[in-house]
Amino acid sequence: MKMIALVALAALAPVAAHAEDVAAGKAVFTQCTACHAYKAGAVGVAAPNLHGVVGRKAAATQFSYSAALKASKLTWDAATLNTFLKAPGKLVPGTRMVIAVTDDTKRANLIAYLATLK
Image (tube, rainbow, N blue to C red; front, side, top):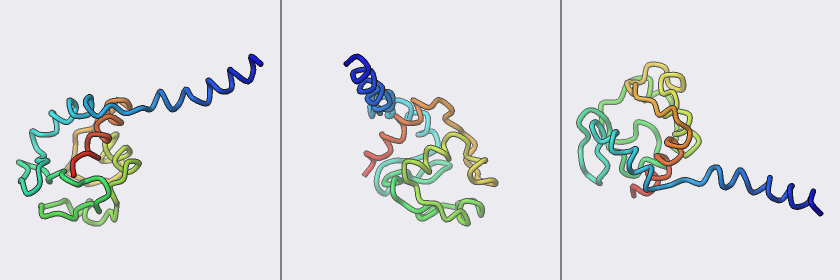
């Protein structure tokens, strides 16, 4: 009986460990707003607008994207955003995005917040 309970708890642990916090993601996003806009129709200072970014093709909005990002053929789903935000230049060598979010929790929360920008 104890073994079954331990297995059940172990199965639930990853779910709790990966629960995203949209409010915490919004706090992380405040650093992004130095360059990125996030409201529909707004223009970013030095980077593309992130309104509706989750699910969108990379380099699909009006902005002067790097040739590397244009050629990447990426779609910004949660997994791709996770990899890109962790190390932008590793996923897309030649990208102009140089800021990385190396903390796994902050990155997960940021992606959860980005998904709300619709």
